[in-house]
Amino acid sequence: MTTPVPPLTKSQFPDSFVWGVATSAFQIEGAALQDGKGPSIWDSFCRQPGAIADNSNGDIACEHYARWSSDLDMIADLGVDAYRFSISWPRVRPTGAGAWNDKGLDFYERLVDRLVEKGIKPYLTLNHWDLPDALQANGGWAHRDTVHRFVEYAEGIQARMGDRLASIATHNEPWVVAVLGHESGVFAPGIKSRATAAQVSHHLLLSHGLAVQALRAQRSQASLGIVLNLSPMHPATDSDADKAKTQLEDGKLLRWYMDPLFKASYPQDVLDHLGEDAPKMEAGDLKNIAVPIDFLGVNYYSRSVISADNSWKAGSTGLEVTDMNWEVYPEGLTELLVRMHRDYAVPPLYVTENGGAFKDAMQDGRVHDQDRTSYIQNHIAAVGEAIRQGVRMKGYMVWSLMDNFEWASGYEKRFGIVHVDYATQVRTLKDSARWYRDFLGQPQSQRTAAR
Ligand code: FCB
Image (cartoon, rainbow, N blue to C red):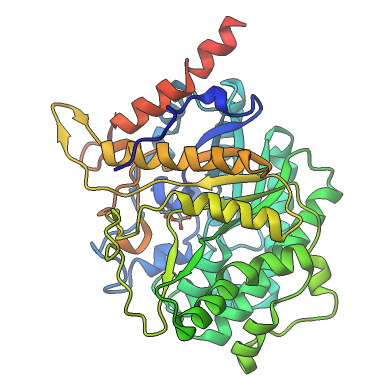
């Protein structure tokens, strides 16, 4: 394990740099059908036998829907500038079309108001994967209608609480929704079709562009953007086959999203690869996708190493791996950010997610998660290095505030800097949270009060 050199201090970053923690609705809220919430595709997917490693679901999760107020106190005590969270679309509009649910809207409005009161900037994500089930019954993201329902959803949220939001991200990780949800089918809605996945990715991007335009028309004061999951791709060997596959995988993960967003085109090599499975588009779609945005969020966990025969195994190079079996590779974050800055006319960038799942042990009321602490320190240092190399970086958010429902892995993988005892819902700051709090300095509330 490497220790960052020189020792990391907040003063090495610009004063305006935003430090945060992140969560998403389905992973923490619970209250799956409470107060008028409609089911989401993740509620249904969890019911499919074998879909979730520990056969769990999001019915209870971290009970954040009930415990939001004390959870916000905990966030404030960490001293962060921002809290990144998502709205559950079916909680505010149960079928994704038709009537809105006031109780759901009230919940998020209370949350936003309390954040503002505490001097914490609300960073909202509209779609962190939990599409209303009723829209899936109508074809979901594969159906062009969903694009328009999403725009209405964005407009409804902006009208209700947009004046208090610092930031609105349209989608979280469209690649995951498209490919894991519709090609490999390991995530909701569990479809296995490459053509559907390609169509879904196009509709997600289109809905992003149209939503941004609609929010601007409503004079949104929040900064508007999207969050992508990206990794640098490295060939396992120097063989032509490994290098060619690496180039294609880079196209499928990074260029497939970055090119339409910033160059109004899809990469030709990936279109050729997809052949008849390429998405159906209408005239003007690409122009609508490539609208200017205020920020781009990057979720970074590891690099990808590509071998033509899929034989490469994480850990085989001797690097540490996390409990997800993802290589710990902080220098990949610098490489990625510098490359995005070099190859595209990007707006200011955020790391909107970064963190690690590790096997934690509670000892005498403490979790000594040195591995997670080092992971976070080294990745923050990697962001600092990107800034030194000229990348315009605006902020960094740890994934995640607390242990939560890790999708198909259920509750077995713990990403939190706060430990959650699922039997009692007791929250305990791990050493990583204590380190982050010290790094950030005094709690935000005290800082504000001291002025
Ligand atoms: C990302 C997701 C987030 C979390 C982390 C570990 O892909 O956006 O919800 O599950 O991975």
